[in-house]
Amino acid sequence: NAGVMQNPRHLVRRRGQEARLRCSPMKGHSHVYWYRQLPEEGLKFMVYLQKENIIDESGMPKERFSAEFPKEGPSILRIQQVVRGDSAAYFCASSPRDRGQYEQYFGPGTRLTVT
Amino acid sequence: TQLLEQSPQFLSIQEGENLTVYCNSSSVFSSLQWYRQEPGEGPVLLVTVVTGGEVKKLKRLTFQFGDARKDSSLHITAAQTGDTGLYLCAGRRTIGNEKLTFGTGTRLTIIP
Image 1 (cartoon, rainbow over the protein chains, first blue to last red):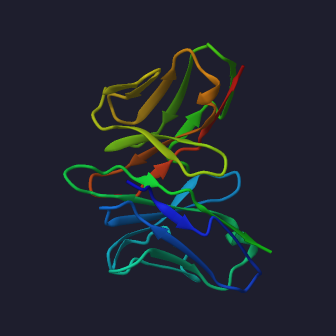
Image 2: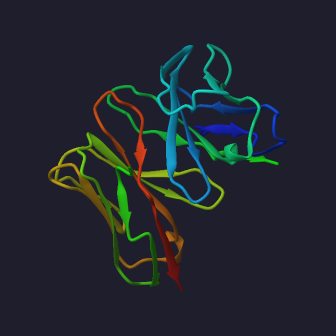
């Protein structure tokens, strides 16, 4: 059973460009979470999605950031007009949330560098 | 405000020694998970504890959830170089609230 997949693993963008980060959950998982790890800081929750629904976006910055999890295809975290402060590792996690299984399994992350 | 404080922040010990790392909070958590993260990789789930006072063992690793579900500890017996990594605790505040609150992390180095 393949794990959570994220691509690209590394992404370099100039200030003002758009960044698109993709996450494919584990097979059978329909719940996706995005977290951000800033340099020398811990992981911080950003958003929780189910297929076609945003359940909790309390950790998302109010501007420039958006996330989706369409019926078909991966979940996408989109950052518009990136700034240097967006440089971080972005992790996706998935869970089945079925029969009491609430563990979140993480992907390898996308390391975004804004120049 | 950091809800989950881990200590120590850094720990370097000789192979074969025992160690304990702590995860403390003033808040109650419905469940708590421990992860290990290698450089350049995502966190890997080690264990989930749910019941106050619960103890779980994973080979040389022993995890305990405090009676009041506000704290947890990870004890490693006879540490090996392969145990080197960043250990993270992460809690879920309430049942049904899916987001994880992560601790500050303990960076463990085992010296051969």
